[in-house]
Amino acid sequence: MAPGIHMTIIVRQLSFNDTSPTQIAKYIYLDQNISNDVYFNTSNGEQLRLGSSLIFTKCAINIGENVQKCVSNTIRIQYDQECIMTNPATEPIRVIVAMDLSDDLIASLQAVSPRLEITRYEGEVPATAWANAEVLYTGNQFPLPEQAPRLRWIQVPSAGMEGVLRNPIGQAEDVVITSTSGMHAQQLANYTWLMILAFNFRLPEWMADKPKAHWPDRPQSHYVPVDIDQQTVGIVGYGSIGREIARLAKAFGMRVLASKRDIKHPAQRDTDYIQPGIGDPEGDIPERIYPGEAIANMAAECDYLAVTLPYTEGTHHVIDDSVFEAMKDSGVIINVGRGGVIDEKSMITALSSGKIRGASLDVFEEEPLPSSSPLWQLDNVIISPHVGGSTTRYREKATAIFAENLKRYVENRPLINMLDRETGY
Image (cartoon, rainbow, N blue to C red; front, side, top):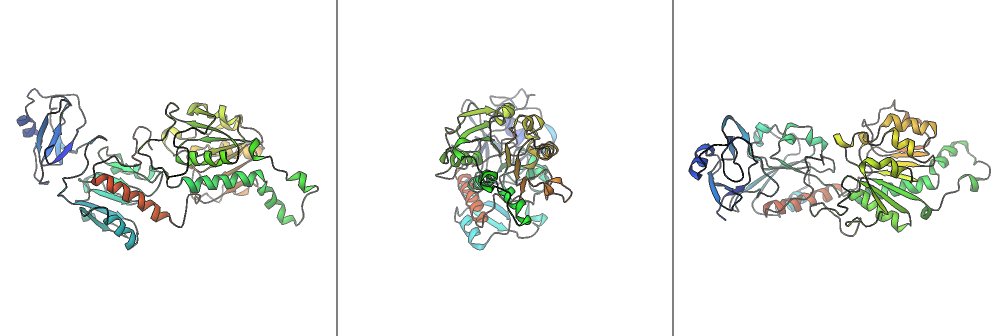
């Protein structure tokens, strides 16, 4: 393969007649900001030199042959997932870390490759710093697309990517976005299991009775739990968190059901972050996996409904009246995904009326939870301030995933936890 940047440019419809490499170079070779050559690999294996610019007039190459009509405004090149994403081995990769990371963590990133030029900003990133950045690690600082014309990849330190997607740079399809999804699986599964045990042993009722300074008559009967191995948990969203919940539930003898968007592929993807030794990578544990449209059918069979879904347009209020109507009166819902996945008003009605027994919620439609929310006053609800996935080693774990992705980036291998723009996660 010839030295240079190798990429596939996304296809457009209109085409030019002249398809020779010379003509392609004529229409695409526009500036000299990048010193190395750019090549396009055609579907028949031919390699075409396109010049040395990463910002082009609005032209594209039809995968087989033709050059599209050119328009005057400039756009960023769009890469597909198979293209090689980094400069030649002699070129530096400029990385901005817009996070308050320790010197030791920065050193662990720098140790990935001598090609990395890492600059840390603990406060606001200066506007002038964006121009040459190729990689960005941040949770809340995002440049405008025109400020960062060479930016190719954003790593966020969270599982959810809705924050970056609210910014214009997150909508640029040539910018790859990756997350730390999977890092929180063990903590959130432990949190979920804590809540299953709490409701099974009737902890909310203990706490409600404590201020009275006496127990009800016959407390052994009043507070009697149901054997865990005689109960069913339904997991809404069978990603890394759901799979670890399933592993724990199976260890305690519970019946496990799950719902998943793509039921034909129960195994996790090779490019998902999977912590060794936990979860259910092959998707073998659930007795049955339901499609997303059948959550209510699954909920009807469950004593506990554990919600782990990310928030996207497609998951907005998927837990609605129909699900609460289908749940057992003794059912408990636990949400460790995102608040907007549940129709909160419908849930409050179900909890207040006794339609369901209880809820444990770490996430809410509005955060922090407003003081006016009825959830604060309901004795059958356990709430926490979005801390279920927290750990004293959070930054170390998140940085380790970023370091692994940096290694893959330098080696031109697929990154872990890449955003699927069709699903939004």
